[in-house]
Image 1 (cartoon, rainbow, N blue to C red):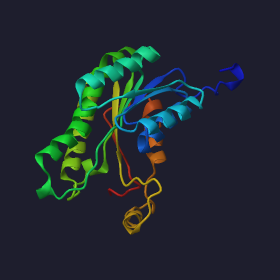
Image 2 (image 1 turned 180 degrees about the vertical axis):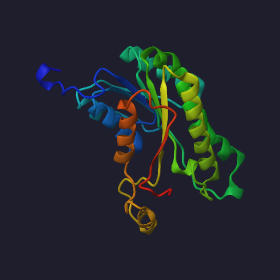
Image 3 (image 1 turned 135 degrees about the vertical axis):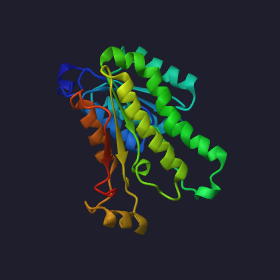
Length: 249
């Protein structure tokens, strides 16, 4: 890349970030927002290899370095390998976004043990494993962690008991991390509400009508909140930020 092709310095220039589940949807928006702000960005994927390649190309097109690593966040060996690969490529790690997550609609009485465990393995165990693997590098850099929780972790949704409970646990894990790893690492959590990406239908309109801001959220709204925590004073830690247009009020 020539000097004339280099992007203008952004607030995250010289920083490195790892976004789990960064191949598509909210994760992709987060990865691109961080790259636009100047960060070198690694993304993980589990089954979305082609989407991950597309996102990597979009990151590189912004004039920063991109890395794609396969990872099952519920498996410790896979997590350690992905984090190690990121640090080996970039030389350090400044920012971890625990975005990879699972979502499922099931009546409470019909949730199987396997479904319950799978939800917690991705939504709660996963962020724990990735943060644990990244701890030493983040401590060395005075880094930051942003976990992606959910409005469902604050308010009970009758047909999403395992999802809501796993996200509520992630919210508490975020606060515990913030207290345990201060003052070296700041840890915050974002709780998106109804986030749509082109979806239409009466159900989505109903949520928009119920939302004080009179629209559903977008992945860009969540990415902007991540960018806030990525660039805000390091002194801000242990916070849970709902990005829901007031839906939870």
